[in-house]
Length: 216
Image (tube, rainbow, N blue to C red; front, side, top):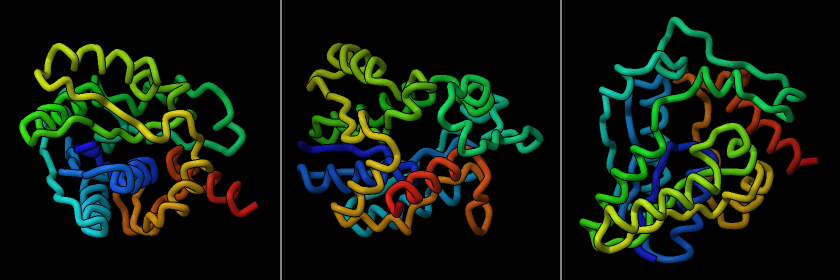
């Protein structure tokens, strides 16, 4: 496997990077900046993770994506969803709409596939999981399957999308990361870009719950 890895700097992408490194050759880590509040934090975490594994890293700016959406991830006047731990077990469709970025993962995968084909790679590795796949259609196994059908036509080398954590929950991903020796302390999963993670947003809550499940 010669892979381009989508790196957001968060838990899922970090563990998928570690697994990709142990499973083949990672030729590039790609991070996208589209005006999201945590862009600088995500880029910094991704750069540190890539450096740890000796992987080339590149940040791609997509300002138009931030311009066309009013998602709370970009719009500082909108409230980022917060969730109690009990709410994370429920269908979060209202929350999903508030952090949705139009065709974000579809765009990211296609850009990464362009790099993969140009660099004689064969795989785009994405960081999805079972929890968010239930609420976000562009995190689901059906989405990956559909993307692979499309890439069979849009890339001459038939680049494929792969995710090592697709069927895992966050606790499983923490366990895998520890087994692989991924420096999880370098990750940034918070929707905000502050000095420290907020601890309140849905993303922070999911990661916190995962660590508590592993510790317990």
